[in-house]
Length: 219
Ligand code: BG6
Ligand code: MG
Image (cartoon, rainbow, N blue to C red; front, side, top):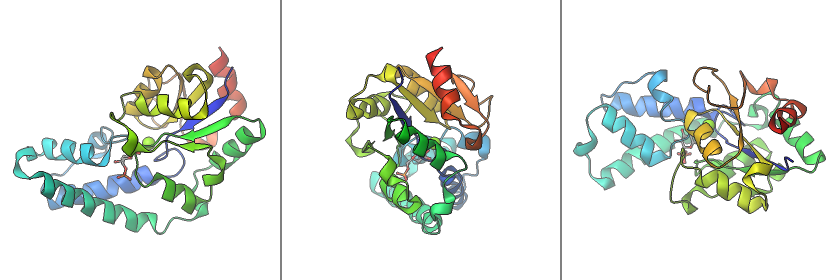
């Protein structure tokens, strides 16, 4: 029986995946490493420093910077990203998400956030949805990033549930893999080809219906 929902944040609760893309793209341009949306799929769900490493590798520049310089570059991207986040309001919760959270609460399901983002708690506050979340996994408490299942396993554990009692919701390939490796039912939101490994896929959040998710997870 499903007793909990575990949400990714960026691209699931709000469109911040697009802000991450814009901010990384600008940094890439500054460094002379242009990249497109197809490459960006590889950054989704991946931590800030790992994303920077992937971009530098893509531009054959991994060896050109010291660790300290890489941290400065990652900070620069984050400051740019936060300039988008500052403009976020409660209206920026993606369609259908607030209703899904509300209904899940009414049905006594537990709710967790499993985001790689260190900005997660602050963004939930800005969106006015923090009170729906029973727990937020702190990504800095983890050893491994997605696609490792650690973040989803920790989310289930913090909720006091077995992974088999949880549904994970993701917009990224790495996230779907993490959910599966944790032993959970995986809901993909976005491109059907990118997310083809998911157990249930919707093209956007407005298509999410709790009944349908529960029904499919039970099959
Ligand atoms: C993930 C995003 O949720 O968080 C990634 O999908 C992002 O794009 C990562 O890099 C880390 O986020 P932040 O806010 O800590 O830089
Ligand atoms: Mg995401």
